[in-house]
Length: 317
Image (tube, rainbow, N blue to C red; front, side, top):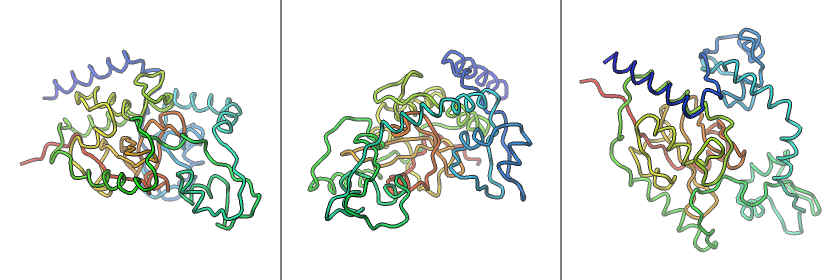
């Protein structure tokens, strides 16, 4: 069994090289946060920038939790982060181009605007650094351009208001339509850890709707490609993947599980891969790249549909 596992691992590594994944750089080790630790202290200990630590672990703030497990980036990942910082000016201009201004009119409210643009009130407040919900006539708000919020992999027309509740009910009603058991087994915990590491090697790959290569990839193609490396052939679209495997609750998620979200389009479904610590990696149409996000982020917390387990450990008798 051990020899077969070693052979399988060697084969996977060779496959990564064929895909060109060695250019992304694999993470080298994990670190468990101890009492008195801070991002600054950990960055000095391992000789990596704070921004590199935050990027590879999907951290939006500097706050750490006791016993939180951090991924320490390899040197190639550090170099990639530093390179990204050098072109931050260009990135800021691109982000600005993806936003548009909205002038508050008489009778407007954050709730009404949120319904109109498909964002939550909290998301609009965050985009505009608002502390209160009151608006003034003539006030200028910054909002993502239409289509920049996470969208479905399948191009369908947005329904009218009278249809929206029916569509949403249909999506939620489909949650019980998965298989009653996963379709594969993890050989051991090392294989699952390797799966998470492979998924993270795609960080920074550009997002492209309908794409399925390292030049551009969408959310369902990303999930399909990762599982294909581990001998599981998933359907192509997120809506089909939603019904593939065993449904699991949010508090039961394990590394490797798929996580699904309702999007602003009709029948829209977005998918990512859960990697532990309440985080998931996905091809984001909003950020235009493969990145790590947190399930507690308001956008994803509000739109979470369910988890799906594709592979599980063999149960001991």
